[in-house]
Amino acid sequence: MKLTKLTIRNSIKQICLAALIVVSSLTIVNAKSQELKRSNLTGFGTYSGHFLAANLALSNRDFKNATRFLINLYSEQPDDPVLIESLFLVHLINGEFDKARLFAMKYHQNKQAIEQPESSHHYLSKLFLTADQVKLGDYNQARSHLEKGDDYMIAEMSYYLLSTWINFADNQPEEAIASLEKLQENSFHQIYYLINSAILAEMQDRQKDADIFYNEALLLGGTKLDLIEAYGRFLERTGREKQAFALYDDFENRAGKHPLIDKARARLIAGDKPEPMIANAQEAIAYNLYHIANVYYGAGNYDEALNYGRLGQYLAPENSYILNILSLSYQNVEKFVEANVILEQIKADSPFYTKAQIRIAANLEINGQNDLALEKVAALLTEDKIDEAVHMEYANMLKRNEKYAQSVEYYDDLVNKLMLLTINDANLFYNRAVAHERLKNWPQAEVDFLQALKLDPNHSYALNYLGYSWVDKGMKLEQGLKMINTALVIDPQNAFIIDSLGWAYFKLGRYEEARLELERAMLVSPSNADISDHLGDVYWKLGRKLEAEFKWQQATIFKSPEINYDDLEYKRENGLDALDRRKAQDQMPAVKAENNKLDNG
Image: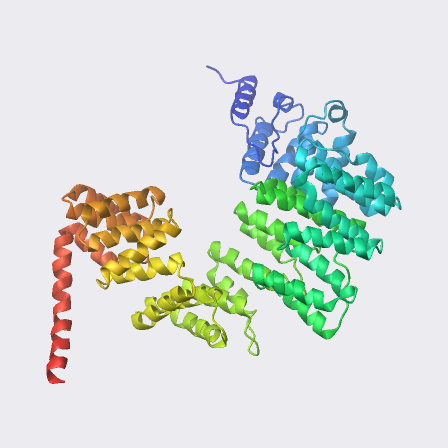
């Protein structure tokens, strides 16, 4: 069959229709854009190539390159509403707000878009234009753009919250309260109704009402950091320092330590009065867009979290809560470079700064930039003060990079600083135990594992690591087996713990039970070299030698720092029995030497 331009065009059309790529409900493919108009092409196939490349970039969430390809398509079809809207979205997600505004305006001036507003992001572009008019202070224009979307729960929430603050900014307090009251019709919105009611009452100098709303909100969201900050600042400003201290203490007792609380306490001690967390309507709208982004983030819809987070950032570019949710959303779609670009925007005086720098380092480590990651955390260390979070992260990072002796030094600093041991310190002892075990300092490792379990008897990692180590060393086999079983009750789908249980059975000579557990571990983690190696040993003992050799071969492919690959190659060539004999012979001189010491002692 001869290939003509029409044939290729239709083929591409069918391929795209068959494999629609939807990211954040964003695609440049729909029935109308499939016509693939090519009136001014500079070369045969150029349009179709950009079309497919744009879709591929969108499917990979490569929004920078998607923008480039979409612009090429737009240059050929400047009136296509799908392309216009797609360019609005990618510019929004890229944080290119001036360009996003341009395409949002173009979209809502487009005749096709006006006549048939079918797009799922028709509402989002209207919301952007609403935010834009709020920034300009044109509240009538802001109202003209504000619409309810088709996502009922979020549409109601965003519409009434934005209406509230637009009315407030436009000196229409009764209309503001009426809009806010609408949220009470849905229990899902109750927490947001209460928080906004408290902030609104605070701005209107209705202190008693604000206090009532804040307290009711605490009953629903007592560990919401932003709520604690807003109410705490309110208490501090209104001269209720004791209540503020109690609020911060209660938060830390329930949610753990946080730099924001440390900063608030320092402020209280110094007698400084803070500014309100939300100072005006624009900040309130940005704060509520953060709430919507957070709802989507909690539901696992990271693309919409990015959309609404960017809308919030447009109104409040330095808001740490917004920058935090944006970075987390990027991390959850494995866009670690983009996450770091956002995290670098959190300023040094923000309570979120240190955590942001630690997360930047973690993202660098994920991308294989281990030295840069270590440098980033090392820059946070100070000689005169031990920051627990920084010290712990640096020690853990050193351990992950196999710098075990250095990591122990930093763990020691943290242990020496402890006054009263609590369950929260179990991880510290566990991590130091692992570092000691890697340094072959087993006595100290064992002490730390036991201390971790004394503080937290349900620490599944400590139970598993200590139980496995005892079994692997041929020590306390039954006690080790019991520990591993306890860990598995706590974390039943953990492949490492299932592997430990299988290995314990192997060491006890219970090969059939070992097989069942190790095969189950392989189902949970099919590419785990340690499990493959262990299962190979079990198969060998059961006489299934071909399967054993296959599993050992898998272990050479998957790789693991736990495996002695010289031993693995030896048993692949000579069998497990030969390796056992060689190990027994290697141990004989050491046993004889120890016996001679005892005889001469």
